[in-house]
Length: 479
Ligand code: 5AD
Ligand code: SF4
View (tube, rainbow, N blue to C red):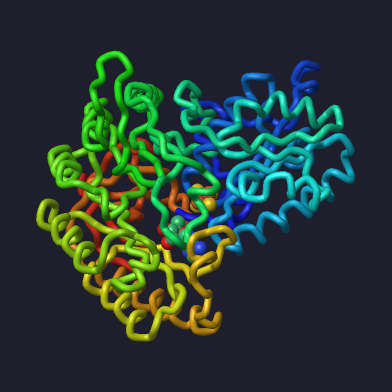
C-alpha cells in the first residue's frame, strides 16, 4: 500500500473499542488531569513502513505523557510522517503544512514537526525555507523526539536527521493507532542496501539492518494474545533479513523468521512485504508452502518487463530471471497470488520496451499492481546518470495502458475464483454496508459477504465466491 494522498477518513479509521479500548484522547476531558494532558496529532503518508513508524513515534510520545488526538485543532504537537518517493508525495505534504500553519495561527504555541523520509532528504532546509516547521526528525531519530520538543519549545532549532546503522526500535512496543484489532504490522528491518537507480529510499532510510528475531516473535505472540489474528512483517527488502544471535552466533534467515512467527499460533496469519526478486529463495517458498497460516501471496515488484530498462534501473535481474522466479512460485504454490510495482516511462524507455512491461503483466498474471510513472528524485543514481527524457504525456499514456491492462488481468484473476470456497479472516464491516462483513483470503483478496449471527471481526469463516469485480470478491458463508 502506497499512499500519496490519503483522505482524513482513512487516517482516522475506527478502533475496535471492545478489543483494545481507544488509544485516542476523548476530546471531552472529564477531569482536570485529563484537561491538562498534552496531545499530539499525527498524519502518515507513504509506505506501510511509515504507518508502522508512526506507531513507534506514538509509543515514544505516550511514554512521556502525550496522548494521541484525532483533532488537529486540539493538538499541542502536530506531526506529519512524510514520504519522498515521488514528487507528488512531497507536494501533498507541503499542502498539509499550509493547513497546519493555519491551525498554528489560531493556537500559538502549537508545534509542527516533519518526520520521516522528507525530513531526512531536506534536513535543515525544511526549517529554513518553510517557516512553517518547528521540528525535523529523520526515521532513525525518533527516540530523540521528547528532547527535540523541549528544544523547539525553547525556540531553538530542533533537528535530528542522523541515520543509524543499528537502530531498529526493537524494544519499543508500538501504540496501535488506527487498528481494527485484527491485523497489525510488525517492522522486521530498516533501511535498504539495494541501489535501484530510481529510488530515494537508500538515501532517506539509510543502511539495511535487521531486528532481533526474538523481539519480532514476542511482538507477534503479544498481538495474538490481544486478539489480533494477522501480522504483516515489514521491510524494504524482507528477503535479505538476516539476524545473528549475539551470544550463540546462530543466524536467522528470513525463511527461519517466517517459520518462527508462523509457529506462534496456527490461527495467527502471517504476511510479509516487500520481496525483491533477486533475494527471494526456494527456502522461503517451501516455508510458505509448509505452513497453512503463511499467506499465499507475494508482492514481487518487477518495475519493468524489459531487460535493458531493468539494467538501467540497477535491479540486478533481467526479464528471464524474473520469469523464472514467477514460474518457481507457481510451481511450488499453484494457488499463490503475485502482485507487483511497475514504473512507466523510465529514462530512455522505448515503445517496444514499454510493450515488454505490458506483456509481463499478462504473463505473470498479477492479481493486482501498484503502478506509477517515473518521477525523477534529486540525488538518485538515475538523476545523476540518465536524462529524464520520456515526455510527461507519454509517461502518462503508458501508465494508463498498464493500468487498463492490469484491471483486465485482475478481473480475469478474480472471475476464476467464482465458485471456489476460501477461508476468510473477518476484518470488519464492509465499506458499503453494515449488513455485510469484509475480510481477506490467503491470497490477499478482499471478500465481502452478508453477516450472520454470532460472527465478529477476528473470526475465520468459509466463504463461497459468487461474484467478482476487478477489485473485490463477493460471496456467501458456507459454515
Ligand atoms: N518514480 C516513480 N515510482 C517510483 N517508485 C520508487 N521510486 C520511484 C520513482 N522515482 C515506485 C517503485 C517502488 C514503489 C515503492 O514506488 O515501483 O517499488
Ligand atoms: Fe516513501 Fe520510500 Fe520513505 Fe516509504 S521508504 S516513506 S515509500 S520514500
